[in-house]
Length: 257
Image (tube, rainbow, N blue to C red; front, side):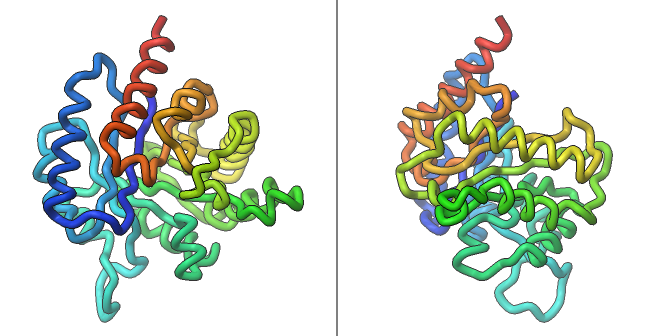
């Protein structure tokens, strides 16, 4: 199985989100073998998107969540609220949250713990900035992010652990990671996650995010170490997104032969 997570970020209003959701539904109907697709829209349109996706295999995700369950936390959205609106997944520690909103490893670990204790499935995001890769410390940087987030985490046996490797320098830059580098980092992440958590191998999924588009998606998805992709800008363009879905479908069909 392959996973495609579409992170719409802070881009679309209600009408645009509804239109794009319907377009996504149309392209999925035409595929013989479909990956698991999840849409991550803005908080304000979660319910509208959920209605479009009702009774389909498409999942709904949130881009962030509060650590606290309820209370005087102006501007926050709790996990309970996300559960009520029908979310299946939630992103935790996305590089834009870490960089633009100063979310450090400690805060990310707390957020991950809160999400893991809920009905939602969290997707932990990790990845190195350009300076760390250029200095040869990409492995150490990502390893520290992983250890901090996972060392005290209790994962229910039935739950999946998703980790998105998103090198910061690749996000929104149009410059995706080299496949060989990405495969190496995915192997490292999978091995460390298994060692730190002792979770089942079959329940650990590592996906790639960083300038994924219709042209390079197949090259990533055909690799055994890649369980899926986290798509940003290309998920807002239906033809680009359709190409990514088709790539995943082709890989899945080939794997059955």
